[in-house]
Length: 401
Image (cartoon, rainbow, N blue to C red; front, side):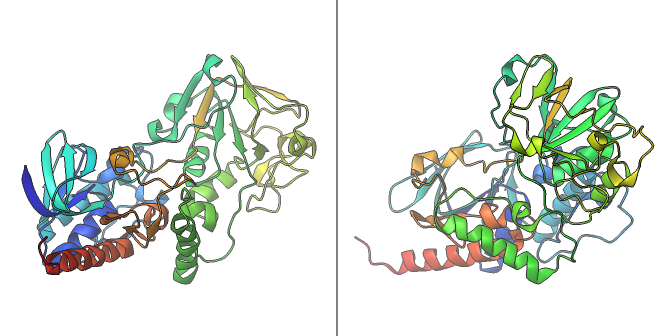
């Protein structure tokens, strides 16, 4: 078994940032990446998600993304090209494809990293496996009986395949906005449902607000609770996809349905929010609110021609016929390979202080909780590298047993 001072698991933004700072501190980390090529989760995004639709791609430390007119190019091409250039420019030792299957406690105060490409004994491990490989599918009664198509946003590849379909989009985040902005006018009907009324942010989301949002998420992981997404704290801004969805009349929100049948979604008789006629749910246009939208004889975005292409077909009742459900319901941290370390707290999360796992100081978690978005990943990479340096320095100064 080969010995390394530091192993980094994952080569997305958080992993590459961590590896960069580790090198700055004098280490030569081995980076293990499960992908066939550079780019992390970006290489799997929909071809229809172009760079001008992305709500933020932050430069990696030390090497700026080359300027250019990439706005109309798919992010799944642009970002992997940048990451590949970054790996070469910084001189990172990246092994791929290498899927890590387990991290265990070894002998002599080290951790053992097991993968389908080999095993390593490491003095410290930085875990940056992200969330993309663990799409969240919430359970709703009757889902197994649905005869139409169900897919998660992770499998969404653009609007063309939904032409003429009656689609329900579930979710209140940026992924749902992306889908809604593209399906309206292509699908026969598009209906948007969320568990909670979405919050649209009218102000400019500057650096101070970003850091405050990260701090709120950080409070949860320090308490050992499962992390919330940063977007759930920040709300949605006026991004290009939000503006497009609004202009197409797609932001008419209904409360979450209660169950699914073979060809319908249904609301219970005691669905109070549906009874109250909540249809706008905080959409960023004064015309999209309770009392407007299809059920009130109007339409989203102020259109009132009675024929909004692709809008929802809800008639005010408790049944809606659909043949496609797109679950834009987020992702969960991909941490199954850490199970042998038994890190979970009673609350279901992993307690971390910054990036340091309190139950296992040899392990750093980046891309988890507050650093799971591009807002906090670079800062977390530097913090993780500093923590690794402190741990390895302390371990080397201890007297032999």
